[in-house]
Length: 381
Picture 1 (cartoon, rainbow, N blue to C red):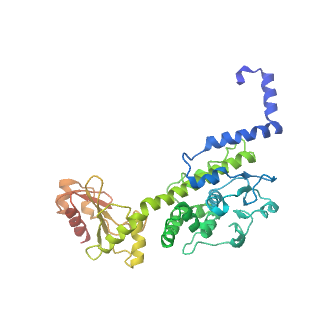
Picture 2 (cartoon, rainbow, N blue to C red):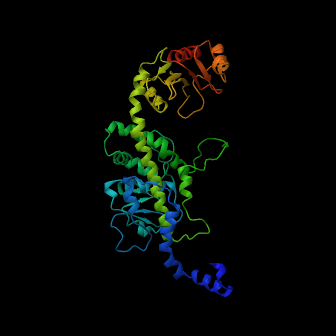
């Protein structure tokens, strides 16, 4: 404790701890403590056990370093190369690899794969950088320039999905997940790392809790020890964080999203009123499937309302969004109904059992299925 030392003793103490030898001896123990302090993963998916235990080293390389090496740059790390390393670690062919963090080209040439450094994109020799002049590769069908995460996903994504789902899914289902995971998980990481804004013009608010932002907060602060050993352990936490979120997202799709697809497909094919009203016998995540299924069936934009029973027993009338994730609707509920409830709404709509319509007009309720259907039909007029 500082208050128990004399001024002379304090000066001697601080002189000792600033010496390179002392800091080097201390760094190994501090690295583990620093990693524990910044750990963001409460329970690690088993598929990430390799990433948890893999060596993450800086040159000079010793004989203890595994023969199989994944190279990436030293210094500040980012979400894209952390996720790239996480994805590779999930694959059996890379399960014995270590990560080498350096910008030394001679060392990188010794690596079996290199991500986010080296100014080379050549999948034949596992080189996945996106910083070189003239590079503008995107995933087929999309417009966002790929980062190292997107490049690894482009070539190994289906294999990664297979590993996460224990290879239980047929190839055509993996293809569905491949696109879904890219759009909703990988693409924004590509965009952020390449400096591509999410929209045109001045944004109305900032988002600082996205995965890329949370990875950036794993760095040591400016006034903390940033020795290679400590930064490498922080990078491990970034690999585990990004890998865990990818695994949980894919497993969530497998567990809850995929089973809804056949339900939505069947209900969409049975839509009434010239295909404008769909009744879901079982509530499920219908919106995320609807747009893909409409495109497959060549009926994009036709459906206006989806009806379903909520957990409280009320039937909902949900206006279909103009596009997935949009707050705009194809046809909102009538202006005259919006913000009304119960008796006032029954009088305004002429529908018995009407319970509410949201002020924005995107959703309403009725006590019965028949009443909800009548509200939707009147809203179409």
